[in-house]
Image (cartoon, rainbow, N blue to C red):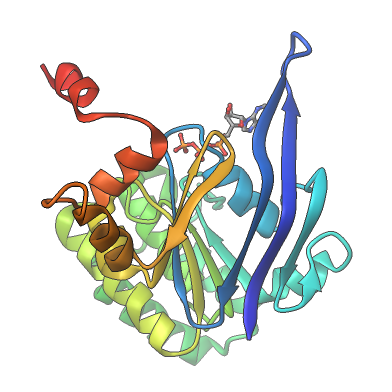
Length: 260
Ligand SMILES: Nc1ncnc2c1ncn2[C@@H]1O[C@H](COP(=O)(O)OP(=O)(O)OP(=O)(O)O)[C@@H](O)[C@H]1O
């Protein structure tokens, strides 16, 4: 069963001086139910734009996007019921505590108070959130802590489709691993996960398939292990990072220079 179907989608933005940015250009791909699908690409390649379109927050200029068969333009309400999006710009009631924010969301999802209480504590413990901070206002939290609350909120119910825009950016290594375990578990329980990441190791270990986008275009799609194996004929020590550089046109000399 197809969880996401993207067909010939383009999205253009107009800049102030009349210049048109092709954020996404004629992109097509499918994501199967239960799949963990990674979106990789350099800064500005179009990852967030793509995720925002699937989340019904932006309207494609061309083409169509379907989520479990529902068109994001024609049936946005149906799509919204099936998805949860986690991003760095997560919206919270900043003056309210983490606990109050999560409890509020649980109410919207129709969870009972008793169940919500148990679930919030379980989730926060599973991602190593300091229990004593649950009653502090969100505005006092670091970016990583806010990210954890945002992730916990997405996992309060069993979403059909999780859209995770750089879910582990800003998290310490342990929290990162815990979030990756949550993502893996959600997929084994039937959720489909679309995630964007800059972390090649994360993409390699976690994703069933990845796609690399560059300047708004899909440049390669496949299983990370296979993509690496294919490149080993050319570079015997190839890793997913090598695949990334190969397809986005950057080379190691440039990277070395930047490091120096
Ligand atoms: N609202 C907007 N108005 C104008 N241009 C935009 C807008 N949103 C995105 N863009 C442009 O579209 C292109 C793709 O941006 P997008 O945020 O999707 O990239 P990204 O791959 O998510 O980047 P990053 O890895 O830095 O988060 C960029 O050139 C960006 O400047």
